[in-house]
Amino acid sequence: MAALQAAQEAQQRAAADQQALQEAITALAELLAAAEEPDAPQEEPDTSQEEPPSTPSPSEGEQGPGGASALSDAAQLAEDQAAVSEAELRVLEAEHALAAATIVAPIAGTVAAVDVTTGAAADSSATITVVAPGAITVTAEVSESELRSLAVGTAAKVRAAGTAESVSGEVVSIGLIPDTSSGSARYPVVVGVAEPPANAAGGASADVSFLLGEATEVLTVPNSAITLTADGGTVRVLTGGEVETTPVTLGVVGSERTEILDGLSAGDLVVLADLGADLPTSDAGPTGGGPIRGGDFTGGFGGPPPGFG
Image 1 (cartoon, helix red, strand yellow):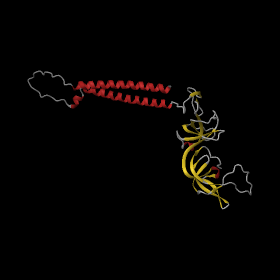
Image 2 (spheres, rainbow, N blue to C red):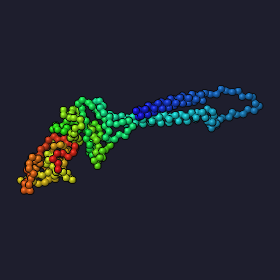
Image 3 (tube, helix red, strand yellow):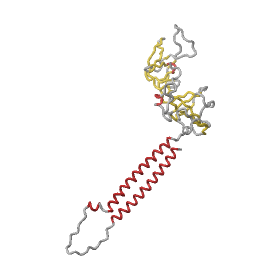
């Protein structure tokens, strides 16, 4: 409300300054028109000796009453123009403040709760709850490096706790005030889901993945075959009955498979993690294997993919 009132007052001051400027322009125009009218001729008394008519110098003409008044009105006109420009600037600043004070909900619905009060300082923990049939929002926390890859409109996949299927969504807002309670800065990112799963409940947890890249007809391996390293990753390849650790260059990372840019060829056998197998002993070799295959692939980030070690 304060920003709206400031904008209205600034607009009123600008209107008053513009009116004063218009009146000054009209008065100046009338004065200049009167100054251009020739003076009525006056009779000169007879003298015994005729003197040649004197021509007033330009300086004398400029110092006349009409010239001084014109200069004064021109100065007033310049002052009024500066006042109007200053008033227009105040209006622009007030309009920007009003726009910044406007909060837009990511979905259409009814405000159910407001966790802020008038005059109180609002931080990242302050929330306004909007209830709407069908649509939901999910708030994810991301690091500063991950935040640079996101923008409003970025596609996302949301999997509610207790479900196996993911639903589509998109980023609707990005918070600029980090939460540092965990020791590192985490920024809130709100994802809107137009068609949530039937069992989605308020306050429930969910896994969120953001679509940052997409690749088609590329070489991929299951995420459980990859071990992350400082330089990228390694994959254990089964060759001639022996397992060799091969460094690989990773591309787009998805929730189940990862693109391999370099280090493997189609048809190589890679060793996968067998989550149902017993823990190996000192003399037990690795088990499990599977061929690499190509195909359509999408990926992003949402925490380390399952199976990464």
